[in-house]
Length: 119
Image 1 (tube, rainbow, N blue to C red):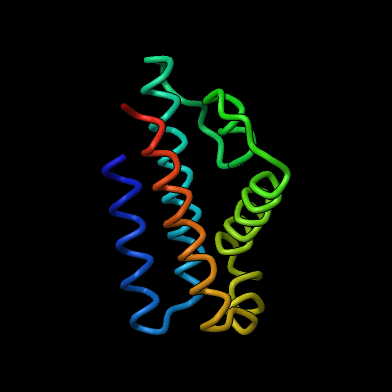
Image 2 (cartoon, rainbow, N blue to C red; image 1 turned 30 degrees about the vertical axis):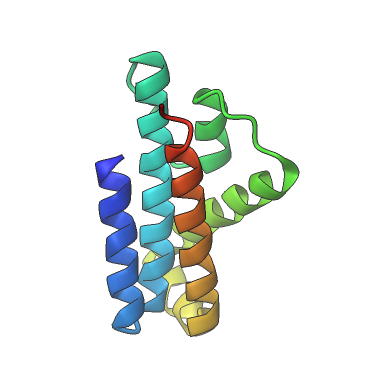
């Protein structure tokens, strides 16, 4: 979970410097690493090399309610868009300060939720 916290801290730094597109990228990475940490914790096996957050939650044995399923799916889609150069400029223009902050807060809450599952 240390890597998840590191990426969340990086998302905050990106927010503070106005790099809102990278807030989304770092938030996705934080949640991905949090879920992969849960897979390691629960199964002692290596997590799959995928970026799909709902699928990672499933592999981790975490039952997501509909709201979380939607949130994880949306964040997964945003991650894909931040990886490809042709998408970056377009998405970058659409990411507002408010949207970046919303995703940061959501991710912060989800990381805390995952950590609450570890005794």
